[in-house]
Length: 420
Image (cartoon, rainbow, N blue to C red; front, top):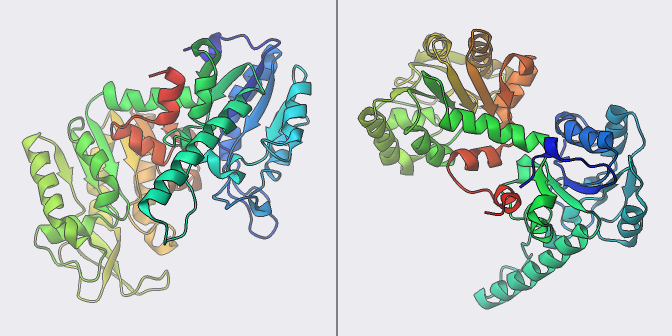
């Protein structure tokens, strides 16, 4: 496998899978956050700078067939502004416009293809009625897989080289993220700068962490993070638990959690995690106090209690001062920090203080020499909201892909390019 920094694209046509799955304003359809577009710029600029031409392909949203509200057209003006040059657009990634425009592309020119998910074969998931039999489902899936190969093969004919720079979809075995790599020789497929930096940051944390290594896991459910938590218990010195999953652990230990979120079918699992942490000498830190609300609303009345003494009828929606201080103290003593998931209902201002405090503690620890990796929507949102993105070591664009990689799973979009 070639490294993009060592490859000369002069006179070469590259097809690049990017992640332009950006949020759009529902009324104007204008891009409201261009983070993912900016993330692709180093790879685009490298290819154009070498004297190559490139074809960009991406998905946006989850369309059911061709749907105008999921068109990639709104990306064009934002991309052109960042690049300072015209970007061509093909209104159908497999249509005649894409074929002819790709063939006519000159060195230095850039072509953006319309949403690859306008074709169901991109994802390879047939849409079937609930009444479909197992045999019908199997046959439809096999047929669509063949069409997926045909789609990938056609996309591959547009270019000489394939570059995957869409880490956010690397965990999906889709036509443009994994299958297409099969139609390029090993020396003509590679990762873009974004994927390379994502993998380097994650490998540093998971395989070469300086100690103490602290992982901070938040979010609603233990079940969403169980595989990652179990993998981390083999690596970390400290594991901080926050967010809604806190209360499953607290109830498992016999605490009173009021109406707080709880996975009652995961109580035994929570106890096993606590026990496994003890066996491995990992310091498992749960909140000691809780900011509670009388209803799930930003205008709710609030109270603070010990985390295992939430009043009846109330629900815990954030960590409170004692937990903030305890967690921050541990973070400040850490040399490696991984953060995935909020400490409370971050989208409500009244319950965002805990998440914001953790973001600031991580930034401060980073300023003192720690390596910090941030991943997951709300964690990234907290970093960005507090303008701390340049104050931490790495902010992952991956989401689900980051989780699966850190769980130890193989990602199809990564394995395909590596030829593994």
